Amino acid sequence: MADAFGLLVVWAISLVILILVIAQGVRLGMRWSRKDELREQEAAGEQYRPGESVFNYKPQKKFK
Image (cartoon, rainbow, N blue to C red; front, side, top):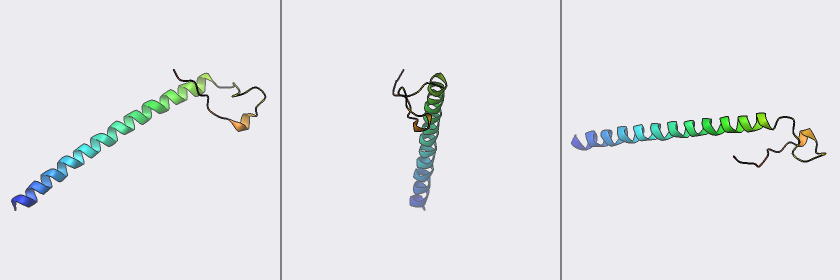
């Protein structure tokens, strides 16, 4: 009985840790997507290379 209770406690703790790790990953991903969106708004209308088609879009490689 004690083994089952101990296993349940370990399982619950690992579940909480997993939820916290996923939450941090979501926060980080949202922060990155906001930065990407701001970069795209700043570069709106600029061509990647002069004379290149708009349909062959590649994101700019400048980092801030």
